[in-house]
Structure formats: structure tokens, C-alpha cells
Length: 78
Length: 422
Picture (cartoon, rainbow over the protein chains, first blue to last red):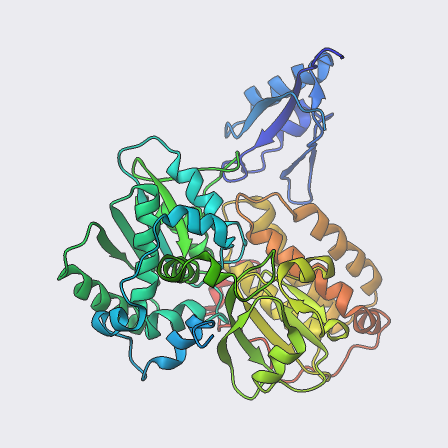
């Protein structure tokens, strides 16, 4: 039995999001933008051991002018 | 066995006016099964509003909420312009729908029942008003409230409807976790489609075994279907789930050799006529990319251009977006534009087609509700089913079927300015 690894997923509320694109600048590993400037977020959970990615996700959440992002914890790495 | 197709009895038994409460009680007796919830679970009823979610599971979710006040919301908004089943049902026997709502309320322990009918349909509003007045004269445990939100495609989406009940806004809400409990005020809300409610009514009166006499084991019961397009006349009829699609279409006088069938509704999918002998139920349609959805079928004849039909629907759907989410507000008009340029034919048609396919995959799943996903599904199915015809358009041989006549009815957009992408 391996130790359960914690994972995070970055989620956007599409209603709040106005496509400022800050998240893409702050967390390019997780967020791409479409042709209209709205974020396409990777739905693959990131293990919390990847410190730098988790830190970028935090920055993105804090840097969103619309406060449309949040980090979801999950145990399921899919 | 004369009782098997009981909604049909509801639809055809009425003499052009809705059944009164007394007539309804004579027709359906006041028989009620012992344990309503057990029966509902045993019936295997799936919602008839489009998503096809198991009704018993939805009921259970609200039943398990710890709250003193709960509410049942009957969704008769019928956002699909080519769907007429809820309207037909309410103008034939509103009491059956209301019975179902009462049963559902009993199951979850709710007192209040909010009935939502679009104000775009004053006749139906009138029928429901009359039925509610009749019920008010009789002692009952439930309190009915009639709501008439304005008619919009997305207004019938359950979170949009609840949004209306709370704040008079017909816009879908963001619900990050599923299953998700909607609340009217602070009361957990059970939202049921009007036809689903009528089926709950029938199950409450006659039981699950009776309900399962028709249909397949995984799609039990019967369903209402609105058929239009190349048929003798557009009809709402009741069929057992799992009926042969070809036979079903023959029954309403559809042409013998259609090109394709639109299934599910505007957010549904095209089904090639090669698959006409498929049983009409989700387990058979899903592998073909189609679904029962809101029970809509449109028959498309050979000489029609499936791409042109799709473009009109997509254009209208783009206009019906509530424009809360970027991928929907900008993506859907872009899809309509790409389809338009494929239709007209252009030197870079190949690139346009590639862009259209890419846009479809980019948009999907990124709205707060399923509105954009439905449109993407429709476009992708059109590209698949009409592949040969699309190829003609791409290779510089656009069809001349720019006929003013269309088979999929689409409402006129009232003001030119409503088309935001222009």
C-alpha cells in the first residue's frame, strides 16, 4: 500500500471569469487561454509534491481580478 | 392492457380542453400506492426533461437533506421551440402533472410546490391557473404557487429556473460540485420536468409494475415525442421507450427515406438514416452519438442541406446564450460563423473546417451549464453525419439548397441587434 498522495486541481467559475488572463501569466503550467482570452485549465490533478506548480496555482488564485479561481484538493489522481 | 399507454389516454381522451379535477379523479381514481418512494425506485423512471437522470436518485438526494422547509419545482418551461410535449400534457390534463408533483412533495416532505410555466404561452398559463383554482377548493396538504418566467431557451435549465424563483433572473448558476442541491430561499428544491411529474403521477396511481409493462429494462416506461420536419403534420405522440424508430416515424406519416433525423432537440445530435431501425431509447442511441433528450425528432429529407439546418439552429442557440461564460458567449457565435462560411464556400474552406473542429473541442465543458456542450454536440454530429456533404462544400461545390424552406423550425430573432456577434 502506497501512501495516499494529495493532489490539487485549479478550478474556474466561468460566470465570474472575464478573461483577464492573469492566471495564464501566473500559472502557465496549468492554464492556457483560448482565442477569446478565457482560461483552459488542465484538469489533471497536480501532486502537492510539485511545489512550484502548487505555488503558481496559489499565485493565480490570488492574482485573479475577478476572484474566479480556487484550488480544489483531491485524493484521486485519476 | 388498454391501460398501458396511459399518457396517450390523457392526450387523446380530452375533447380539446383540459380535464377538470372531477373528470381527472374519475379517470385516474384516487388510488395511491402504499410506499410512493419504493415504487418510484422500482419503476426506474428517468427524467424526461433532457438529461435523463434517474428521478428516484434526484428525489433521494433532496429527501436526505435536513431542512424543515423543502420545495418541489415543476419545470414546464419547455425551452425547445420544437418541443411541445409539456404544453400538450398541460393542455390535456394538468391534474396528472400536479398529482405527480404532490407525490414528489410527499416523498421529500415538502409543502410548497412551485409550478413554472413560460409566460410566452398564455393558454397554458390559463389552463394551469384553472387547475390550481380547482385544487385550492379541495382540502390538500400542499400549497401550489404558479410562476410565469419569461420564455428563453436557457430559462428552463434547472439552476436558471431556481435563479428565477430566487432573484427573477433566468440565468444558469455555477455549480462546481455534483450532485448539487439547489435552494429556493433556504429550502432545498427538487426540480422535476412536467412530463416526469406526470409519470410520477401515473406511478403513484398504478404502481411501478404497471409502469414497467412497456419500455426496455434499462429504459422503462413510455415517453412523449414531438415529431416535426418532413412529416404529414407535426405531432406529439406517446411511444414505449425502445420502440423501433422507423415504425415510430411511419406512425406520424414521415417520408419513407429521410436523409437524417435530429434527435434530442437543438442541443441534441443528428442521426444518419442508416440507423433508422434503432430502438428509440438511450442505451441504443448513445453509442450512435444520439439521445432521447427532450423527446424531439425532426425528419430531414434527402434534398435538404444538413449543414444549413445546423447553422440556423446554432445561430439561434448562440443568440439564446445567457452570455455569462466566455466560451459560450464568444464560442457559439464563432461556430455559427464558421458554419456560415463553410456553407457559402470559401477558398480556405479546409482551414475553416479545421478551425470549426478545433473550436468545438475547445468550447466543450467550459460553461457553467450544458448549453454550449449541446451546441457542440449538434455541430460535431452534423460534421459526422453529413460528412460527404461537408466535403462537397469544402471542395468548392457548395450545394444550391439555399431554399427559403427549412425543416428544423427555428424562431425568428426579433431584433437584428440581438445578434451580438455582428
